[in-house]
Image (cartoon, rainbow, N blue to C red; front, side):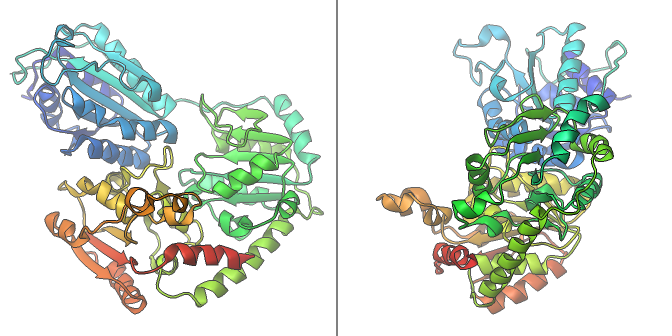
Length: 556
């Protein structure tokens, strides 16, 4: 007979998670959370993962939930262990990824009394979570209702919640299953459908506008959304702009935004200003598109997203449609009719074609560098593949290139931090049906090297580290070079060896520092799937910032 933890609240949590069909549990070791470890590891329903470093563990769970769309559960002991979850909790909050944080706690009487591993745990994530509950110490039926509401909130809001559970000793005892009440939990939440007569006034504005832009930010892959956007593209007064993390693409879309608009004058940009802007998804990478639309504000800006906190990124939002974009577009496309005589789309596509020619011309004469490395990665990666992009310069370089159809793109753009990119990629890889490539800068990779400190990596997981010897983005952006602290406190030059990390964590490793070597290495890198692998592309002796500046100047 199956044994359980001898704590009512541990069994109650387990029962509600089962009722919600939530099975991915990421556990960090401890003593106070022993009842939770015992409860989850004694039942075959749960898929348990042991990740020692709580900061890494939280991002691993985030990567899992990013892929499945279902909450992943984090379990930690009491005290500062819980605080290490915060970077991933904030990322989940702004990226709309469901996480259930479960922390063991000391009994309330010991808080602020000098007891080890005891802090004020209740509500510690209140600024970046949707619900925070602390269960009873003795275990009462009301605890089930608290757990149920928290888990339903994580599912509905697509974000983090925190369940704090005080445990008194003894912690390791086993028992039979308690007699719990029947549990019903809501796991499906319908998208809002707007009345047709309400949408008709927006349809009239749409039809009367000659220049309309749909801007797609970070969004999960959606064949339905892709098909809907292609229908919009049949209208010559509509242009669709997107980034690769939007996971859409089409010849009539603008997929390399900075490549298209970088260095355009205000006078040039004015002719590209939309009358109506529709935004879908979140967390745009391009600073240039933000500057453009903040300076050349549309008359109407409609944001379409199921959220209680719609972002007014361009300080121009006139309407928020609080529903999934696929639901809104299925209604709206039924009402609108495409224009055939407008030239707005063609203006954008002509600009795209002109910039593409100059892009290819520049790359043809460019030698070994970060820019060239990204070109080769985009050309040589097989399809289908999933890419988990690191932040800072990595995700920005990625926006300049087109990738094979079927490639899927993800990145931690909720807070855009470098702290958990590798761990998120590990978590995503554990749940992805596609092979996963993680592309990281050297600082981000070193920062999150504990991501490799786990035993679950499969052979089809690969990492490319672009090692330009520090945070090279600070050599590109204006400002840091004017200070006396550029190399030590912005770029943060280092001499650490990726090879030693790879050896320590049993990854295959290869390093290249020239163009012929890179071409050969990338072919072998993608062909071989016998073991997880790290490829270090060393460009430390290249003036990458100057090459990138020259690239943008050359575009126009």
